[in-house]
Length: 175
Image (cartoon, rainbow, N blue to C red; front, side, top):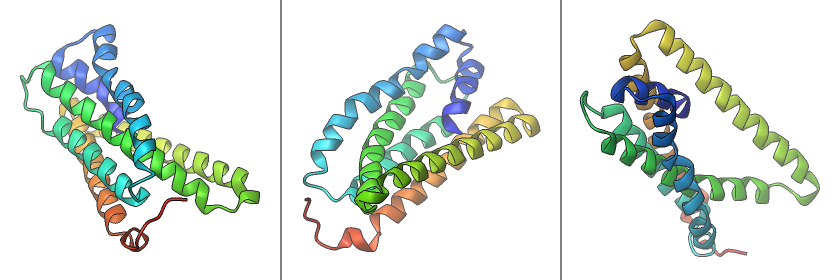
């Protein structure tokens, strides 16, 4: 939902062209790209649930920043929020995927991939549906601020669930 609403927010708040909006969104995937290798190395020392929690927390902070940007703020505040979102997503995605695939027996790996794809698609559809409802029922500024706020709350909740996961409290020894 947040990634879908981001171009609307950037266009509305900063009056950017399509090219300018795309350039302002570029730090998100770049931050994921740069964070993922570091996350892979951290997985050898840190429990995946803890990395998921930290990633979800950083993502939530980025989303909260985007939700709370006051009118008239410059591009730098938006870029900071977008970068935090990318770093958080990069910290979250790798350990989450690893945990899902390693939890499945080897003979069920293809099924685990199917479940992951289905879950991802269900999340995308739900986010798109929520975004379209917000855009149709509220002013654009309220719609994307609300979308970022809801996404931030969901990410904070995910961080809490991951952090206090019972399995994460036990001593972790990577394979």
